[in-house]
Image (cartoon, rainbow, N blue to C red; front, top):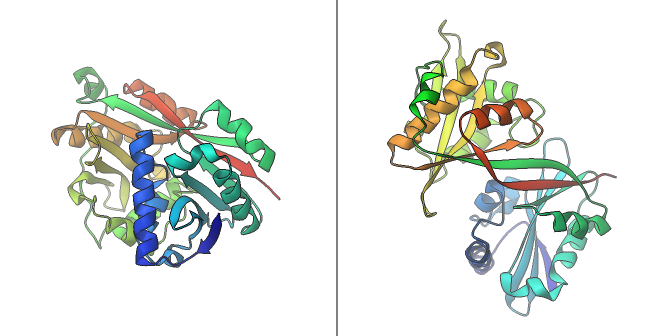
Amino acid sequence: MNVLVLDQLTDDQRSALAAMLDRCRAADGYAPLSEVQREAARHSDLGHHGIRVVAAFDGPSLVGAAFLTPAADHSVAIHMAIDPDHRGDGDVGPTLLGVALDETSGERWLWVIHAEQADDAAVRPFGFEPERDVLQMTVPLPLPDEIVAATRPVATRPFKPPQDEQPWLAVNNLAFAGHPEQGDWTLDQLHDRLAAPWVDLDGFLVADAPDGNGLIGSCWTKVHATVEPVVGEIYVISVNPDHHGQGWGRALTVAGLQWLSAQGISIGMLYTSASNTTAVALYHSLGFTIDHVDRAYRLAE
């Protein structure tokens, strides 16, 4: 097995990686990586995103990849994908993870999508312990009338760049202060995300503060049009801490789900930390149930 550590991908390497990720999705029924890594894999210049890839080859064939993604707190997230035809070999995963650990230092987080109990035992020999669960929750659409009636109304409008960019960043970074993925967004990160092919600003709903001073919050939706059935995601929802405890989080969630339903979408979806019991309770009250768990395992040095 030949292993390369790359921050630049040739056209052939990028094509091979895309094909392997497609095979993983087809075999598993879900994407093997989180969105940041999937988006980075579309580009040759991984270094632009601060990401490196540990790529394992069996002859000319790419059989696995580990994405090394630095965070603002100097920790590193590791996401792995292994070709379905090579998962029984037993060597690809440990080799990728071993090189990933050699290439990084400090606090490392290993993410497993659709985690199961067996994954806890599989990563423990490397020193990883389960630390954080992220729930994917789903809800049938449209929402029942009684749920909408029990929610305070909120006036929203589409996000307008560039005028809303800095106000949105201010609210997002306050709302997610200390959050390892969603906090500390920069304008460049927002621009990168807004440039994604799925973005529809009509579904990026913002609510203006009544005094005209900034935003109450926002609900950014995402339509997953390439899955069957089509799924509508509450992609990012944030409320200015000055307006917490007033029902705006529920109101903005319902507004986003209603917008998705109006597009003919019958399944709503979102991700939330299992430890955020207030949010989990809110989503349960709207009819959401847990579909699966993505788990982060922590290795500290």
